[in-house]
Length: 189
Ligand code: SF4
Image (cartoon, rainbow, N blue to C red):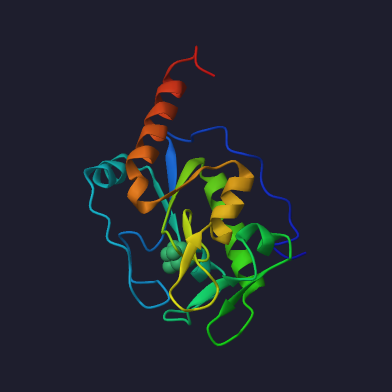
């Protein structure tokens, strides 16, 4: 049985440990692991507080599924991330290689990690064919973009975990604080 065939874990009950957790793309404030050997610098006191509180669960779905650094750029071609999940579109590198299955494996691994650690939200690097949550490159490798999600973000949404781009860290923080408050208040459901 492959990773893709296995059922997803049960949805999270909201938090595990002392504080609500957030799944974060591994390239945010981390090693230069993006396809072009870069990372994403996010400077925010919220990030510093999350680190101090132990809220952050980090992982790179593409490295988890076996890609190397650097690697060719890839884009969703012929549809949306939902179309990729349902077999109507593909993820291709700029050399034409179909890497759809590897991207789907990475997405499943990301959801499994988020679920097993009790993450209630995901802060993801926008524009990535994996982690993008508000926009995608349009599949022409011309630099043109369109609204849309990557396959990791699509899996999170399907699993009931809301996704946010890196510039939306304040919204994620509000969710986390609300979850903490609900867990501390037995009258909240
Ligand atoms: S797959 Fe996601 S975490 Fe990994 S480098 Fe790309 S955007 Fe970052």
